[in-house]
Length: 464
Image (cartoon, rainbow, N blue to C red; front, side, top):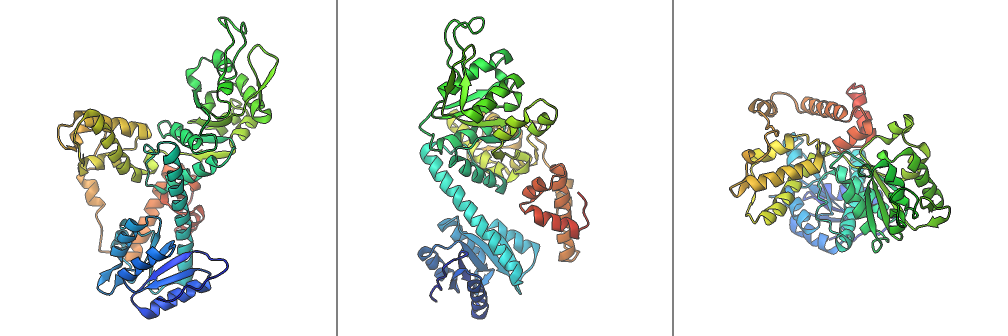
C-alpha cells in the first residue's frame, strides 16, 4: 500500500477504492495535488483494513470492483464508521444506479469519465457533510451524558442543521430564539441546549407566556413586593430570581405584552430588573432562550413587538422545520413511538405495515411531531396484532390511490437527460410552492445550496 504524502495543511483524508490501477492512480494523484491526504485500495478487504488504520473522512468508491460491488463496501463502511461519507464513482449513468447508491448510504455519485472540477465540488460538499455529521455525533454524546437525547430523533439534513445550531448555542452564552410551528419540539430543543451547556448544573425554568393572565405576567417573571397589587400578601420571587445561574425559557415570546417587553429589554441590556412595587434594582445571572410560533418580523412591522427587543433576542436563531418538510424523519419517529407506547401498554408490537407507513408519510401533519406521536399512541392502544395496520390509524390519514402510484411509475421510453430535467423541474416547483417562494427554504427542502437552486432555476427558465 502506498505511503501517505503528508501536507502541512490537509483538505481532508480520502480513501480511493478502484480496481483499475490507472484510474486509481490518476484520481489519487489529482487529489494529493489539491491538498488531500489519500490512501488507496483495489478491493473491499484492503479498503476496510485502511479504514481501521487511518482517520478516513471521505471514501471514493467505484461501483464495480472486479467481481465485487462497491455498494457492499458502502454498507460495510456505514457499519464500521457511520461518519465516513462515501462518494460513488460509476460508469453506469442511470437513475436506478444513482438511487440504489444513495439508498445504500452514498452521499453523492460522479460519472466516468470524471469531470475533475465537478468531482472536487462534490468532495468539498462531502467533506462539509462529514464535519456536520461529526459535530452532530459529538453533540449527541455530550447530550446523552447530561440530558436524555432519546426523544430527539431525526434523519433529515434539515434537522442536522438545527442540531449544528444547537451545538453552537450550547457553547455560547448568547440569547437564543427558536422559531417553528406548534408541535415541532421547540421546548425540547431549549432543554437540550441548557443541559449541554456550562449552565447544566443550574436551574432550567420554562414559562408558557399565553397561559399567564396579562395582569400577572410582570409579577410572574420579575416578582413582586408585599402589597404591590391586590392579594399580594407576601413577597413573590419571580422566575428571573429563581433561574439565577441557569436558563429561563420564555415560550411563545410573541404573546408577551408590550408593557413587559420593555422590562425584558432592560434586563437583556443591563442584566437588571425590579420586583413589582420596588425601586431597588436586582441582578440575576440568567441565560434567555425564547421561542415562538409567530412571525416576529410581522409583529414588529405592525407595532405589536418591539424592534429593539427582537434584535436582542435574535442573536442565535434556530428555525425548526415542520414535519411535512422533513418526511424522512417519520419512519424513525414512528419506530421510536411504537417502542415507547408498546412498553407502556405492555404489548409486543413489532412494527407497522407498509400501507400504514405510506399513509403517515403522505399526511402533512399540521400538528407536527406531536400529532404524529398522538396518532401512534392511539394505534398502539387500538391494535390487536403484532403490526400496526392502516385500520389502526386515525381516519383522516389518507393513503395514496392506485392511480397516483401508477402515474409515479418509471417511464423508460424517453432519454435519461429528459427524465432528469423533468424530475428536477418538478421537484423545484414543488419546493418553491411548499416554501412560499422563499429560495432558502426551498433549497433546504431539496437538500442543495441556495446558489445551486438559483443556477438550476436559471437554466430551466423557472421564475420565483
